[in-house]
Image (cartoon, rainbow, N blue to C red; front, side):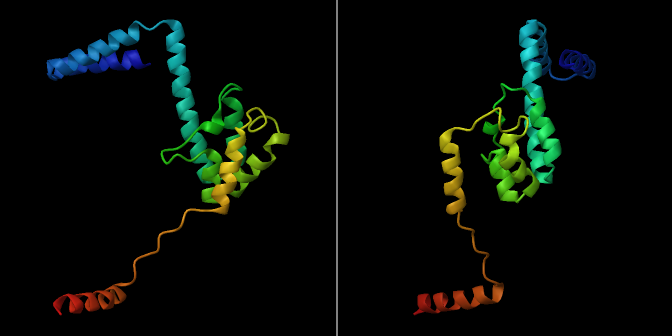
Length: 165
């Protein structure tokens, strides 16, 4: 567990001559961990488990593994609002699946209201569907690739000639 690992690291740091202030910081952290109540420890454990589940969910969407994703979402508990999970780019699981064209995962999200848990147990806010519809109707413009070097050179020559005149 975290306490044992930190205690071992502190002992090793002292043995190898790590800066005293760094060792003291680690010791303070260890004391704080040891002072946690059982309820606080359980809350930390659940928080870590949810963070891991969230990371795994986005990986499963990327791999288009709908069955495994459904199993994972069923296992996180009914009080967890997994529909609100967002990745580092602010995308929900559903938006990420659409962007990656993960067809099996998209199908899971579409048929899930008739299935066991993933979508049926948690309703998205009414405006979420509207936002998704707007995003589909008006996708962000794609950035055009720069022209090949020959074309760029041709485009730059008239500019240089105009500046010289």
